[in-house]
Length: 369
Image (cartoon, rainbow, N blue to C red; front, top):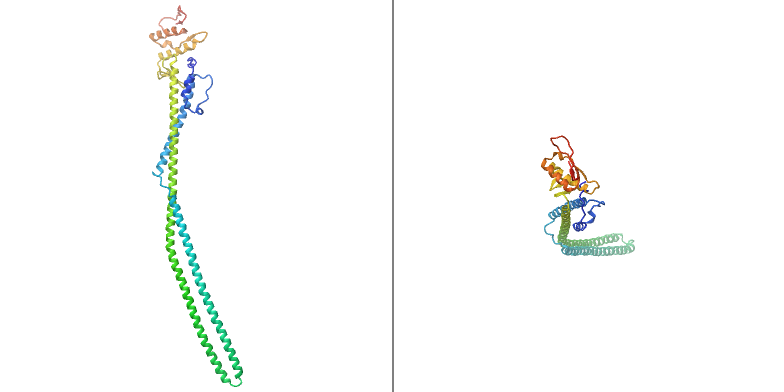
């Protein structure tokens, strides 16, 4: 009823300027024929809600950025990518050198063992062949001689056989000595090959130690690289949070500015209200900042009469019924009657007096008591 009595025109240009920095997506749909004060209040509530959400998000982003900064190292360590590459090449070179040295040592050992074994086998085969040939020749000669002499002298055959056995035993002993000698030579050659391999293994042990050191350094550099990447990621994340928080802070500032402009627009429109000090905030009526329900009876009656007169002014029968006027003292009652006369309305009031009930019709048909 109060809004219906307060005909105001919305300052559309002023409203557009107030909402210049506001995202249209956050603005509510405004019903048609809405009172300007109600429209401003509806828009003000939407902008206020949006600013509260933006402020909450901005605070969250700022806290996230601070927490991320605390979690990250103060300085991002330098990425040891170049050192890792150099260490990797060094390790690969040492590993290849070890593999080549091991292959060469194994090949040398195998060649030495094979050569010694082959020479031993050749000499053994030769000795055995020579022995078999000598035995065959000796036996053939003995058989030939025995055949020619057996009939003549058996004793000579026996001595010859014994002599032949002695010769063969001597030759067998010589051959066994030679075989022992070549076995000893083979063992010595094999021992030399093993010692050579042992020396090569000792040299490789030092190289392997160098390889282990290089691999350990490479592993350390890779861990440093991971740490550098992690620290850089944390710093970048914190920077993104800070940028988002700064953007939200700017958005909150724009929304705050819009709220201030809406408040200013509402105050400008309120200047045109016919009731001094009257403001409307949502569903709450205030007069000079005081809630209407907290005003005293005289003030409430005065405001109510002004509103009633405003509503009656545009009707075909400008009649106002004032309830509660009997609670006013004489001074306030006289002020009320004067105000009703100035408003040009037909008013009906009640009052308390000590005499009997009576009706008084004044000459001017503006107010009847």
